[in-house]
Image (cartoon, rainbow, N blue to C red; front, side):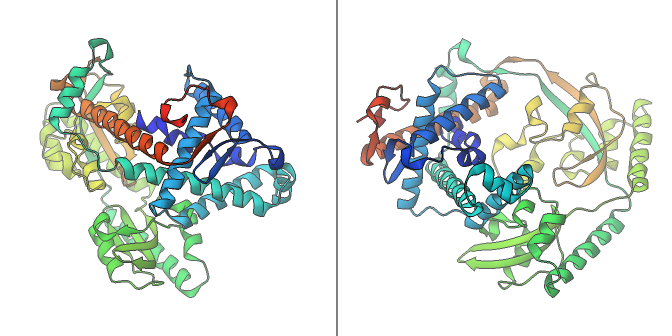
Length: 468
């Protein structure tokens, strides 16, 4: 599929591998040139070995020669990088710098010191950092270029049906067991006090940042609970207001570059924001996110409340559906008898895709769209049974108590349009994106200067346009 075509390069070709390449550059051989970018044999050799190792770890192999496959992936990445320069594709340079800093720090810690790292790599720390920066930058430009090629590709129902009919029965995907379940959630009664404690923590951080006693980005690295930005000092890529939570965006809109906001409450938690700059409709900022934290006694109280409710449901004193309506804190499911859907995911991403409203969940969906705690509880149940209360977090990271009821297990079966339309729609979209990208790539290969060393020209290339 498309994501295996190019993005595998970003997954497999790690920065450590880039540093570990042969250092005798003058003795290294150029095996290919794409546009203005050359590819060395050491790059291909290192990538091929990492590609093989990665696949062994994932439990599968490829029939293709790993050297030839690595060369084609690297050539594709170079082409995307060159085209990104031509099309003036933008990336987040500061985010790359943060990732490089983190990687260098991890390497230095693994070796014991920067001096030890320099000795092992036979180069100064500046050169190690610069090599990593160039590699990450090239990969990010390539990924951004690929995304821009396919981001507007969509499928309509007729295309999904044609895709389905084009598959032989043996080619139809097997849909593993799916779970339909309901839930009742409960936040501790002390949520107001917990929110106030969180506000006070953020106000203290704000004061430290404003007075200069601690840098905002250092506070974000130490305390922020946003896993996507904390390692970058809370920094987000330039974003338009319409992509942000309304309360967050409203606060950001009123700010001036360099200013630090008051505490802002959004659907994700509590924030303080530092506006870095604004270019047109794009806001470049850092933020620190905190969720309310409860004491053990407060969480235990919420557990006990739900455990008492479970006993009433099991004794038929109240139906699960009525209990969800009256007692659940989850607005998305309480009006539907507690039945869980991905409507909260749709709200989270401000998305409207129908595939995000499904109520049938594969094992792999837990941990991706739903909590693994839900899955672990469901595995102990038979259809119709209710779990004991357990502690978990919602998708925003807020602590809560929950009980789940297993409604139905849909057995493993061959995909059908009637039962699995949304899964087939996703597959049809991916297939179309792959086709569009391959067509685009072929045209760009034909229009760009390509050189492949003679001893590599007879290799098996997925795209025949490489060899001219």
